[in-house]
Length: 160
Image 1 (cartoon, one colour):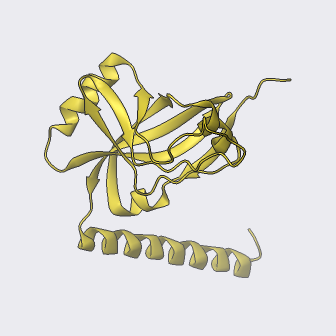
Image 2 (cartoon, one colour):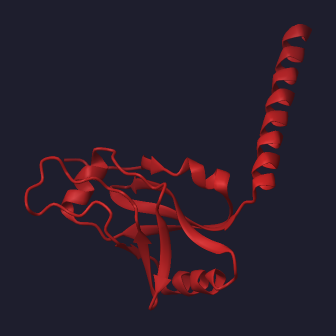
């Protein structure tokens, strides 16, 4: 059987970029059981309620939902169990130093297979206030309106 190459997205936390300012991102491996990998290969996972933490020099992924494998037996996994993240020691110490700052948290952004191995992208994030969210939405709408106006202007000029 040929090896997988490239990146295959499993799940994405779209709400995270709306709720938080992402200050830094890291790619981490995951310690998973066999039935978890099979559920992920079926494309099932949910990152919305998940977060990560650093305890005793180890990084942990908490409250991420990977459903039980439908064809699993008594060896099936718990769907919201705590999973270990595989990061370099320097990265873990850097993350724990930045998390000591008030108002920062570690959240999962995306889960994917990279060259056949399960990976997760985690981000150091600062929560947005309501007015920040409104400002972001207004900027998005303004950019959309500008792009729309530019495209209609180009069409009227004859595509030059």
